[in-house]
Image (cartoon, helix red, strand yellow):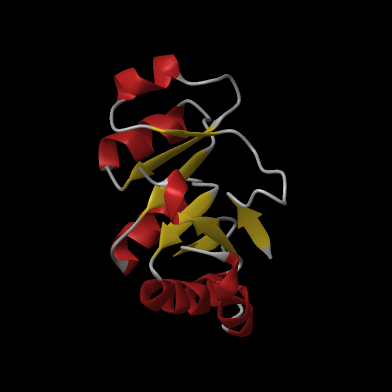
Length: 123
């Protein structure tokens, strides 16, 4: 299970952005995290940038995988649906569910979701 945002488990640099201009102010080699935005997703793809995209639908999920998002992030209900699709189509993107604490690990693991990201990183 991928764990991003836990104090006990080291994780990569994450930079929350909301526009292409925000990318200039990120640390080198950071994974860019943003709410689904077709323009940002396409820019990340064209510039080979590591991205983590917060989605609210299956359609957004499909676009993210097609445009090489490293992580696709959603709430638990949607993440369960996405995981089934990801497993069937052998996604390269990893499916992460938003959590509040490590007390949710058991439930997420039982649902066989790729990983978790703490809500605190999504600002």
